Length: 231
Image 1 (cartoon, rainbow, N blue to C red):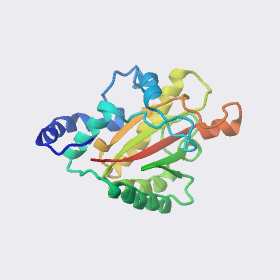
Image 2 (cartoon, rainbow, N blue to C red):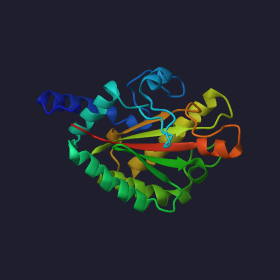
Image 3 (cartoon, rainbow, N blue to C red):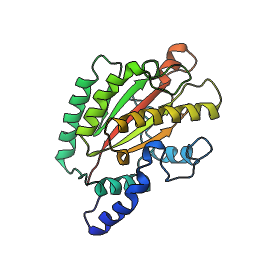
């Protein structure tokens, strides 16, 4: 929870610079050689809400000190928090804008409570086994970036996912690089980097059956989770 005491504002100013690197993986936990948190499974086991229709690995990057750091950084950047009924109304407007701007792009928009999740299938965002965004997808992400910039009282989690083919090391690296590519594009379009965290979840959170081609295609995705900054 955000408090308005001057102490928090001071802390925000001290942490904002460190958090400006959030879009490239953050630094709030130890990382392995691929940039993935070594405590990922423990943290997700505590915080994740797995198996929902949305399929997002909810809570991978939220909760505890990570969220507080981002909140402080956003305060330091002059971004105010929402409270009460204003949270739902704010997200209602943002959801409508995202649906309008992503219509017919292949991006799926889902809502869980006050959180919004965008599912970016890899077939329209990346070539197989690659982490460079397809140029033809830029216009679709421009609509997302414009909306996220307009509705800036939110934190953003970008999480890459893969299918079960290949080693954990390869999948973790590829999913992280894809999440970083999406986050870098968003910041390049004006979304504040202090709002963004990225993670490569590898094959840990499938939303479909990995034993079929169709299921594996669904599991290869990047999810953008938009979380309101609340008092």
